[in-house]
Length: 226
Ligand code: CDP
Ligand code: CDP
Image (tube, rainbow, N blue to C red; front, side, top):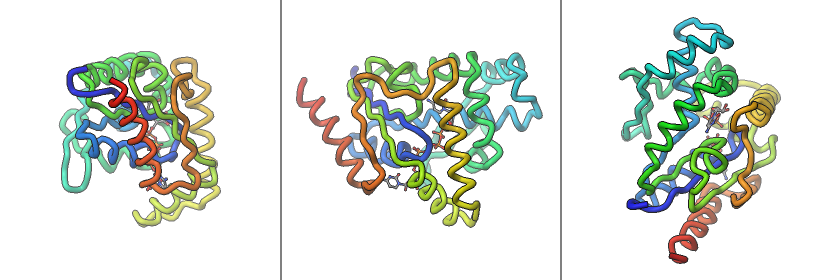
């Protein structure tokens, strides 16, 4: 690829994908693509339209006619749908609780995967999600699968929420994470799964810096082998 390699980072909820993917992208001067934000953006619009989550025809129309975009800012990456800034709205609980149902719909996956493939075509990209190494970018030169215990992942989400002034009980967060992982791993189309050639990293007792360093070293090995 003319701009560099493709780096795919997959794993369950709150394993640390987006946090480390952003830092890795920065280190190599690559673009970062948060595919979860794309599924969340469509879910936001579906909820706003008042559609039922099983109205696949109407949801398919939404995904075909919507324009999702990203823009950098000093507060981090902003997410837009049809020009509306939805950066914060897509992290709300209603979106989180409905995103797995929306992301299981075949037309939603087809449209968003095709967009993701177009963005990554020239390489120089770090993309995180659930099916990037297995389905979206099967030829990615580097594939990482991040995992962490569910207790640790619930703790991470708890801490994040507290910083935002939200105090959801820890056990509730753990149940939400388990339910979403179950749905994401058991859907018919491109479920969450570790690609055969992915490097698995258990981040349970690792710092963000340690995870970034491990991934950077896999990338450097790949770049040096060519
Ligand atoms: O950050 P968090 O772990 O909460 O999740 P996310 O990466 O924002 O993804 C939200 C949801 O989008 C996931 O639970 C999946 O249902 C869906 N998703 C997907 O199906 N495929 C992807 N490549 C990325 C996300
Ligand atoms: O994208 P994903 O849902 O996999 O996780 P995230 O939103 O990047 O990370 C969840 C939280 O875990 C963030 O608040 C990180 O600061 C924290 N964390 C981490 O990402 N990696 C570690 N090794 C330790 C903590």
